[in-house]
Length: 240
Ligand SMILES: [Fe+2]
Image (tube, rainbow, N blue to C red; front, side, top):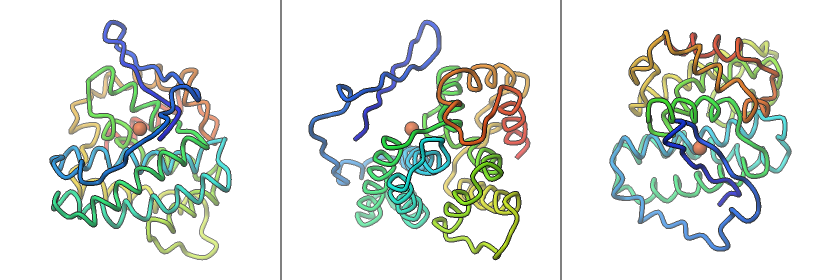
């Protein structure tokens, strides 16, 4: 669905993303029936990848009204149907809605971009061979909390799409915290692993931040961040 591909370099343990119209498929078949056999962990990982595409598209510098609409719907669908698809892989309604959500997420970040979730995700994935979706989601609650100061209206839209009640006039930091806590709870409920559970050692976090916070996807974050900010995010996520 997108003009991005990811290639792992097994020698350098890095992932690179070629991008452009020639990468995009001419024709795509999105058939939920093909996802029925995915085990619960792969269902949760891929579902959270779709969620990350949506929320990162909404908090990227390239965000726009089109990507917002696509992403908001994608977020709502993931919140509603991912737990069902994880619980019962043969739930065709849940599989269908998740396939649609994944497609919307693809359209959303193709029109905007991903940023810190995927910068961290690609780094963790290439260093420890952690499944892409879980690698991207592992620090997503803390990333959204960090973005709330830069794009409060976007994080409030995310909260609403997640079905959260936001107090009128709530401070951006409080909305960010609310989204972060609700997301961490949601992820735990579908078996997504935390950085600690993924066996990422605390002593490696600076190395991860060095790569993830460098030139590349991190530059698309609406909140301008450097390697130290990424390290702060990772340390917070590690004690969750
Ligand atoms: Fe992804």
